[in-house]
Image (cartoon, rainbow, N blue to C red; front, top):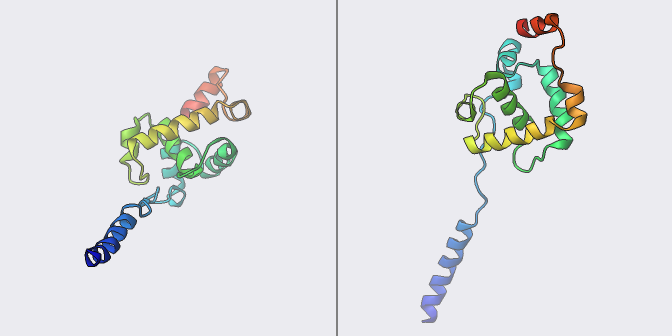
Length: 139
């Protein structure tokens, strides 16, 4: 019996350690969006890289970043806002490596942060004249 326990217990401990091993983490980005050309970036996110970086920095204190960084959350949300595609196409894109439910949560968190008065009043402006509407349409 002692010999059985001497052989069995180390195997049991090894199996338990393997079961609680750290979960595998996937990289959020297959290709860093900041490395693409300016025109492609603007097409995907409807903002320049500089403006997107400013927005990321402004939202940083308002968005929790436990496992997904602020840049990933903001850019996947901006891509959704810019393209009008629902979350599944975003999750299957070439640059973002997140599941559809994760993308959905990111969008919700970013929308909540965008609605914060300090952000909303600084970043969101509605056109007030025909000229401003035309400028918005033409980009």
